[in-house]
Image (cartoon, rainbow, N blue to C red):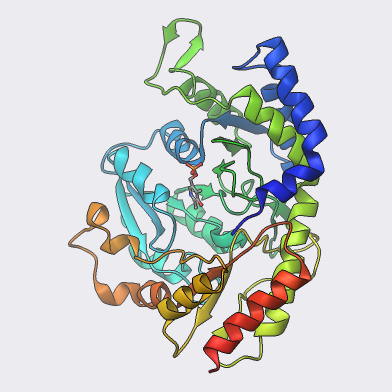
Length: 377
Ligand SMILES: *Cc1c(COP(=O)(O)O)cnc(C)c1O
């Protein structure tokens, strides 16, 4: 699904050099690489504060702790996403409220959010799923109307632009009150292990969060709040510093590969290509950065296609095969099946094809032909 080795070959010298430097200086924790990376990422995103932490799941949890959400507060998020999002809500004893998604963008459905808001609702967590920004304009309007926090789960969307109706253009993860991201190796900006970060433009919230990631300490050995231990290693920061200057090019390579896939698939019966974004082949407008390239397959057995592709040596993935509201851990008797019609359908139809920065035309040709042969046979 991803070719991390191929990508490494291009940046090997810098990566090896900075990793060796961390080892030589033994600044393994909180070293200068971490501080420099933080500043460089703030600059790249155009956000006031980046707070690095251990992984993307921690980042979400810490963002919610920083906002001071309390047990029983309701937090609305999408039924169709990776489980980390709902997991941390439940872990903090907040009440997850899962809602359906849009069938075209796969992102949280605005009408469904409206229906789910109650006096107990305190936050909305949009996920920029597969690399396409959720409808942030509408979400921010709803949040303002109902006095809610917006926590962007940007684990799959780093580097994407969001063009607002008012003409302002911002990076995903800088629009809500706070955002989280993951540097898991396969993400668009991935390190060589685990890593994550929280972003915010709010100075007071950033201060609170900097203490939370460090055992609730603002002054050494004075623990003002209950915190956690969640750090980004210096070695991982060194890898990320080597990759950040290439992020726009990495995303462009993904967009180009996606365009090539879509060009071939778009007129094939029973295949629906990703949609709902500006098709410009650059990063200037509202972009989809294709963390995943996900097709919908109609009238053909999707699981049979998955098996066929693996037999032909093509890795593929089903993100996600089970709606979160049907997962044992997150069942809630208040959920009604008819409220999840889109997600219930998507889990049967979606398939994600190989997507990374090193895909070449020959691979794309082999993959598209193999898919089309099966779907049209
Ligand atoms: C990867 C991911 C996470 C979790 O990140 P980790 O670094 O693996 O903890 C959270 N949300 C979404 C949408 C993700 O894709």
